[in-house]
Image (cartoon, rainbow, N blue to C red; front, side):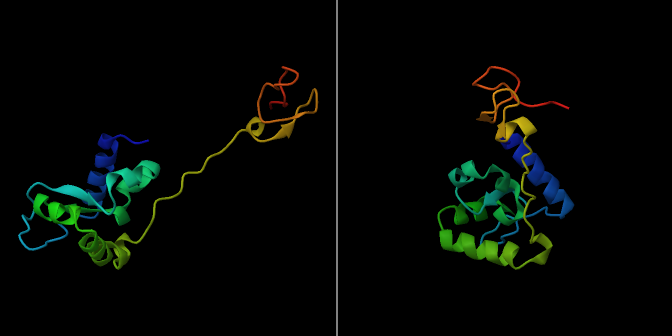
Length: 135
């Protein structure tokens, strides 16, 4: 899982890439570029099972403290703002590439070369020998 420092670094890189240097929300009373922070689409606890989405452009906007506070407790305003700024904007309409997990041959179920029992371990739990030919 990414640390808050790594996530903020990625968000900062995206802000530079897309030239985002002031509050994107610009609600009544907006402070412009004062105290800018990413405002996320969902509550922080939702991202525990999806940490890669914390820096996905569809899930955060750069907001001044005033606008961020307005979104914090207003789910309807939050969703309307994200639809306006992200969902209808083809410039930001992308999702991060899914993480691919590659397993070694011995991590997939196979027949042990010695005792022919099905296992997914390098050392067969039945005969205690190496279960696959390593190239």
